[in-house]
Image 1 (tube, rainbow, N blue to C red):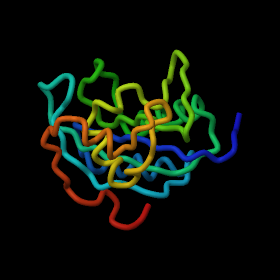
Image 2 (tube, helix red, strand yellow):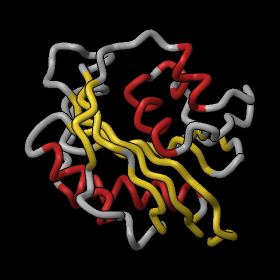
Image 3 (cartoon, one colour):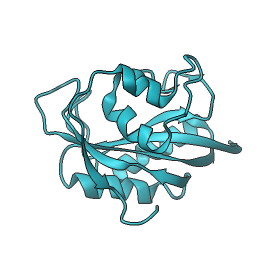
Image 4 (tube, rainbow, N blue to C red):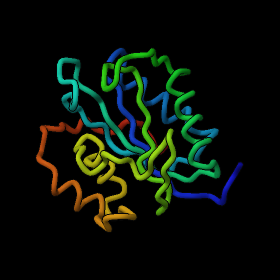
Length: 169
C-alpha cells in the first residue's frame, strides 16, 4: 500500500565495525524507500541503556516517502540486515540500527511500530542530530519541538564529529 508523500525522520546508530561506513551505507540504501532531503552531522555518544559496550555513532535523516509506516519499517529493518546487522540482545551492540522517529504529524501505534518513537524525548543521542536538521519539528502529542525536547534532557557528552556525507545526500 502506498500513501501520499509524507515527511519522515529516521534515527541511525552504529557501535561496532566500521561505524561511519555503516551509517553511510544506510543513507545510500534508503534511496529506494525515501527521498532524503537532509542528513545530520555524526555524533559520538556513550551507549545509553546497556552501557558496557562501545560508543555509538548517531545521525538523523529527514525526507519523504510514499511507503506506509509498516512497509517503511520492514524496508529499513531489511536494510539493516543487508548492511550486515547480526542478531543481538535488546540495546546490545549493533552494526546498524534504523529507527522511524516521525511519520509526518501522525501518531501510529501497532504491535510492531509506534510513531513518534516512544522514547524519543529521553534520548539526547537522537535529539541532538535531529535538532541540527529539524529543530522546529513538533511532536504531534506534546506539541514540543525537537529543540524544546533537547533542552530538557541532561547532556550526556555527545561529541559532533562532522558531516556524515561528504556532499548532500
